[in-house]
Image (cartoon, rainbow, N blue to C red):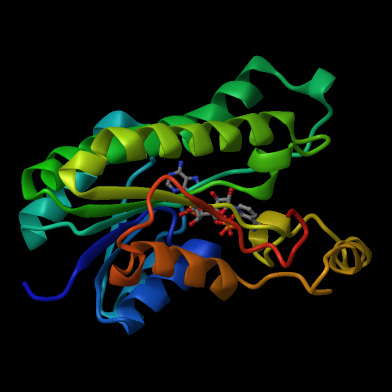
Length: 240
Ligand code: NAP
């Protein structure tokens, strides 16, 4: 197959869906992973000529099956985007064991399981692009988002360490750490809160899913061949 095959986790909506559209527009064959939003994922896959695949990234068996199915179907995987994630706002003292474990299960274990399943293929081919999705809170910490911030900081650590380990195999591993992006993840923020965040942002606006997708695409593209272990932050200047 001539076109590149990309697997994007959490691509049923938000940033992942925008990335799926972007990669498809660039001529890639896109595997649209979803967990619960089956209808959205299938409509998107139909729209972009991709393939929708269900897997909960926090389940290593489901993730391995998904990657095996992708390789069976396309015989190749060129790019992996670990985008699936969940967020939660809570005071630190109110976090339960279950809150903490679910946050890490999806946002950290999910990245680990997905990369672990795809890596032997990349190593065998001595090529591959991995892009993880963290958050500005993983860089600077967010009040009432301690679990999310810790999980997203772990994603940055994983990215940097793995970049060193697999660089000699011709594989790049980079991270996108978006600022505030208008998706369902921020549906709890009312217009006033969003306006305040925009005002705090040097560029004076809230990001759109396409802004994050653009950064993901760049790190996965041939143009980023000499970049690895980096954190690219589409955040309007909110964190510099
Ligand atoms: P979103 O609109 O809430 O979408 C989240 C996506 O992740 C959905 O496609 C969802 O799929 C998927 N997902 C959640 N749990 C999953 C699981 N266990 N297995 C597989 N997929 C799962 O969020 P978003 O704003 O696009 O966020 C995408 C990524 O960007 C996340 O990692 C998030 O932390 C990060 N981020 C977002 C912002 C922001 O301001 N929006 C800022 C910084 C970083 P289903 O609906 O199918 O379950």
